[in-house]
Length: 241
Image (cartoon, rainbow, N blue to C red; front, side):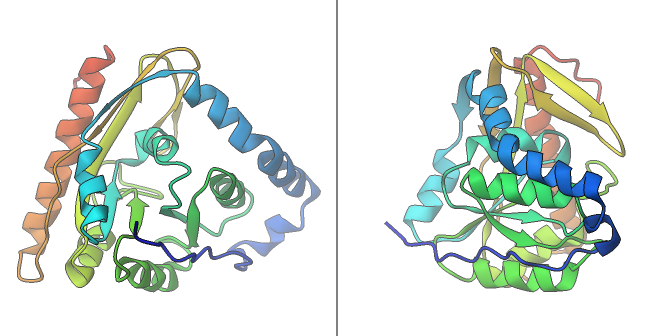
């Protein structure tokens, strides 16, 4: 068993400290810390799970490879909950209160969080992610189109991190037969209890330093869209996208 060294980045200054001083936001964070993980466990773990392709990241870990698990933002919670308790690494922003709630919930569910995103603390978070991915057996979960879109268009970070560290990229997608949807820059899905969740991990992608960046982006986008289409088909959703 390969030991994954702890690198949970907390006590990071918030990108919007004025929000941190507001009583309403502090109460939201308190309730999120107390109830967030319990609520997600109820929503997701009362579902029946249909899992496919877990071997793709598990075999890589056994071989001492580092892994990036990539999933579109819209259904990332399914991947997040399936991989909970593994002490894998995830990304969380610095905006208060939503990012703070996500970070505290993630910690309670067994994730190690790297704080920062493309819109706040991005460079430091990216460098911390590279450090994690240089340690054999580590896994980092990423939304290539997060945190603010555009939807289903990968940003540079996932590809460049894989090229610089030699990490494999395992595309992933998940969806539930029962769900709520929330519209912002993307349609974000939250599973309802007592349904069935389909979670698929695709075959690993390798991005060499000499590969064309545009080709890498296209390949990742294509694989993620294929997986999303398949999980949507299996849970009975329309597949017009």
